[in-house]
Length: 143
Image (tube, rainbow, N blue to C red; front, side, top):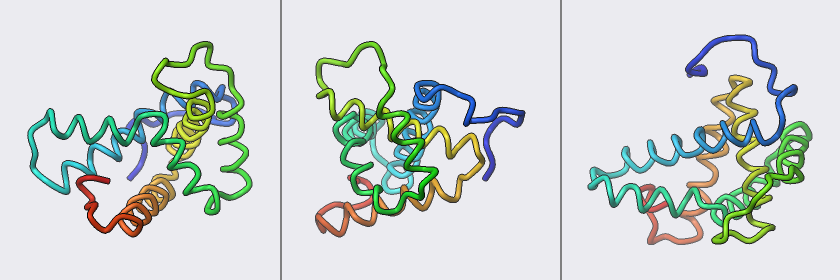
């Protein structure tokens, strides 16, 4: 799989918040596709499951699980995103979770723009596998 649009865009030249803007959508697409493939459910149920996975606290937890798998370049992108100053933090997220989630999203956006879709799939699969291993009652549909 390649990126949806083709063109010259060097992700290293983009601000971490721009990478996070795109990475938010990239991760949400992975989550939504996973939920749809796992079970045919009403849209409102799918939405509720997706929201639980893409909120800041869940993304902060996700990046913690992925940290041992990241190479130096990926870790640097994450840290750039984590250390960015977004301007405002939603009331329902802690400062630390929101910053970690921004770093996570920046990494997702960076990998996507580099065309490293297989790497994104590896990271997402690791999250699903680890989550189901830690809680056998969970399925891919409730990841």
